[in-house]
Each structure stands twice: as C-alpha cells, then as structure tokens.
Length: 303
Ligand SMILES: Cc1cc2nc3c(=O)[nH]c(=O)nc-3n(C[C@H](O)[C@H](O)[C@H](O)COP(=O)(O)O)c2cc1C
Image 1: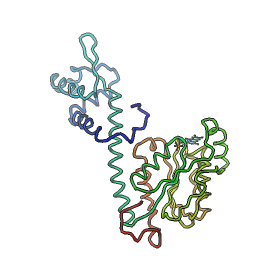
Image 2 (image 1 turned 60 degrees about the vertical axis):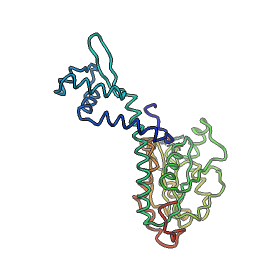
Image 3 (image 1 turned 180 degrees about the vertical axis):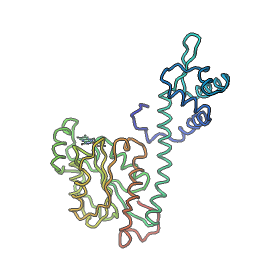
Image 4 (image 1 turned 90 degrees about the vertical axis):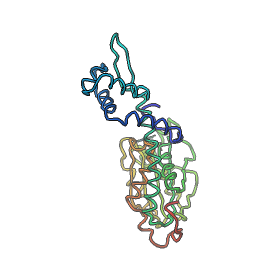
C-alpha cells in the first residue's frame, strides 16, 4: 500500500489481525524495540550485528537471534557486503503495519463512539442525518464514517450538471467564490423528521461548494432545527464555515457548532468517528430536551 494512500476501510479485520499479532509479538520485546530504534535513527545504513551488540551491550548471538525474529516478520532487511551483513528497516512493511493498526483503531473507535453517543444523548433516540456534497469522495468518506458509528441517515447532494476535471477549476471556483447555488438532486430535502442536521461540504476556493449552497436552499421543514456544519479541506479552510452557518441561520436553523477537518484528518480511516467525537463535544443534543421527534422512545443514541 502506498504511503499516502488511505487504508481501505473495507479490508476485513479478521484477515489483518493474525498478521498484526505476529508484528506485535516481534515488537513486544524491549531489546528488539531498541534495535528498531537504532536502525531507524541510523543514517549510515551500515549497522551490523557487532555494532548493534556493542551499542546495546549484549552478546552478538543474542542480537542475531533478535534480528532473526524481526526478519521473519519482515520488519528488517539484511544486505551482504563482503564479509559484513548490514540491517535496515523494511519501510513498506512498517507502512502496512501502520495502515493495519489505523484500521483496527478505527474499528475500536467506532464502538467507543457509539457508547459516547449513547451517553451524550442520555439514552434518548435522536434522529439525525448527514447532508453532504462530495466531488472526490473525501467528504463522502467522512459522512459514511459518521453513519457507521451512529446509524444516522445520509443524504448525498449531487449537482444536476456534473463538474468535469476542467469545469470544476473554472466554473466551480468562480461559482463558489460568488457563493452561488448549483441546481441539485434532490430538488427538495425534507428534514422535518430530524432532530439534528449535520451538513458537510468540501472547501472550494475558501468557500462552501455551490452544491451545498443549493442544498441549504432546498431544505424543507428546517426552521428551529439544530445543525452542525463541517468542511473538509486540504490546507486552507477559508471562510466556508461561517458562510455556510450564516446561510443556515437565515433559513431559521440553529447552528450549534462549526467543524473543519484538514487533509491530515480526513485521510485517516476514523475521520468520521473524529467528526462525531467533536460533534458530541459541542453537545448539540442539550437543546433537544423537549418536544422533538422520537425522544419519547427509550432507545440508544442517534439513528
Ligand atoms: C475546485 C476546488 C477548490 C479547492 N479549494 C480549496 C481551498 O481553497 N482550500 C483547501 O484547503 N482545499 C481546497 N480544495 C481541496 C478540497 O477542499 C479537499 O480536497 C476536500 O476534502 C475534497 O472533498 P471531496 O472529496 O468531498 O470533494 C479544493 C478542491 C477543489 C476541487
């Protein structure tokens, strides 16, 4: 798996776990971790058994044994040069380990997030939906992560006329800068059954996407609803969030919190869970104490 690639969230954890157990076992030893540390901080690329033994103050056979374990797990490479054998870390193997660990972490966090929601909604059933637009799939990935952890509904907004890789950087940028609204599918978004709206968009030229502006106009039954707005962006969030929040406030929606997720967060498999954690932190449920949909039911969390 390439270093900058997002780990595939559909990878079957049961396939990964045995592999990870072997790696954890190889790394779960102080001397072996010290070897990994020495190899990772070595710039010469010429660390061999005798040098490692001297630095760790242990015997050469002991070092050889530990290196054999690390090699068996594919964590280190060896290279022969004349009489000497040098050891280096297998970078690709480490990247795979990190990706697998992140997937396991994301799965654990999903369970923790469900518990977090259950506690913060105080055992009341809150109906929520994520309304989002996504061009390259990042915002969609975050929205789907929120759904996986919370069971809420997803409403994906699409432009009636799809952007092309060229028109997005001409028309798209121009329209977002002007805060224009694109014609979208669906024509109307009836949110009257929901207690909480979570509305997300990518940042385009420092603004919200014209598609999400269209979505705000297409809302029906939104007056008095609580909302959380979020953006995904690479490096510079601009003023997309306050603009989006204002457009919603003008429609009578109460924006409880604004959350921006940078590229370094959105590329992690638990980005949806991270958004949910920040939503819960803002406690958008406290205003839903009386008279909102479904709260009479004593069930868990969001749906
Ligand atoms: C037309 C266009 C304009 C963009 N402008 C910005 C910007 O101003 N600041 C920024 O940090 N990222 C910008 N980006 C990057 C996206 O906001 C970022 O990759 C986002 O997470 C993509 O979400 P999506 O995959 O759901 O479409 C831009 C991307 C596109 C296509």
